[in-house]
Amino acid sequence: MTVTTTELFLIALTIILTVPYLFWRVFRTDYWAPLVVVQIVAGIILGPGVLGAAFPAYYQTVFSPEVIGALNGIAWWAVMMFVFVAGIELDLHAAWKDRRETAVTAGLALFTPLAAGALAAVAILAFPGWLGSEGHYYQGVLGIGMACAVTALPILVLLMEKLEIFRQELGQRLLRYASLDDLAIWGVLAIILVDMERIARQGAFLMLFAPAAWSMRKLMQRLSQADRWYAGLIWLVLCGLVADWAGLHYMVGAFLAGCVLDCQWFGEDKLDTFRGVILLTVMPVFFLSTGLRTSWEGGGLAVFAVAALLLAASVGGKLAGVHLAGRILGWRKGEASVIGWLLQTKALIMIIFANVLLDKAIITSQTFTALLLMAVASTMLTVPMVTPKLKKLAVD
Image 1 (tube, rainbow, N blue to C red):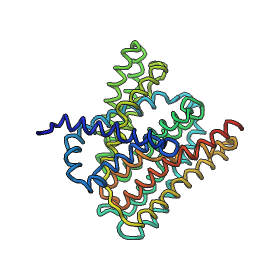
Image 2: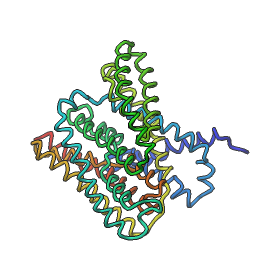
Image 3: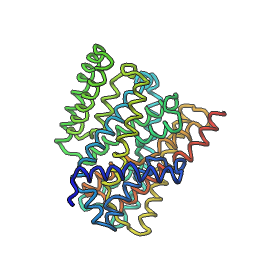
Image 4: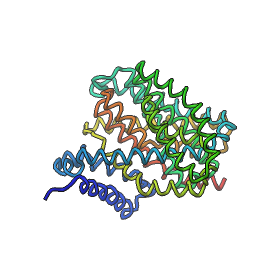
């Protein structure tokens, strides 16, 4: 009996929704491995690099190119909507009011781990097998350094929701810091992959976005709340499309699309409901499809040693940068540690970033494997490290 593509898609969707959820629920991993981490790891295990290599017939049958294509479409739309909502909920008035604090913290939280990661890359690339066949030395150093500096905005929002600080003043501060750093990663990626056509497109996007955003704000003020939702989704798609065309990545466009809109236009309760539906229904596809797109090979103990070095550079650099910001800005005791640990979470955005470097042959599969291990480990560390620090901060 022939199995149709639709049936294969539904089988894949059943696996995506069932396997990580059951593992997460049965083994109660939430404290050290939130569901999102389990979903990413499950995607990696179910993907071509692990189970697909052990059972190629399974992978080629269930996760056929047609099924992967359908899952990717859902994944792109899911993360666009999720980042769009995060952008809407960012209080730009507060960001402007506290622009010095935001700029100092975001800057140090980015450049300190970037420098630490670049130094680690210098040591790693001194040995053969880590720089890709098409990569220049400076591209490898900058790419690995930036991978260590990344803060994964979608994952940070999920963790703040779990820790019940997203709506609090601390959560809004974290959102501001991470937003600037999340934008910076695509700028650095553009530098790594620089070409004149990309520069021209990015310049055109930036020139056109400001008047388009002004016009969109004027339009939204004239519409009813129901119409604002529909108009907002159209605006989201257009911003994602043009940003991706410009080489800035569709997620940058999605976030900018939300940033220029006001939260009160949509209603806080409705935004909460909308975000909850996205998390429940389509974000698991994004988490799993990200893992399914990875292709990594074991490189022996050297890969684990490099992953440990990158983890130390990433976490240590981020904590050092944020603690320095705390000293400059006069934060109360304990704040820098909480903020630093939350901002060091990696997961999806870094995996996407590293995938681009691998696709362009700037890094090798060994380097990608080490970065992947670092990203998962950094995300798993976040909640166990932050939870007691948050409780202590609340008491103090």
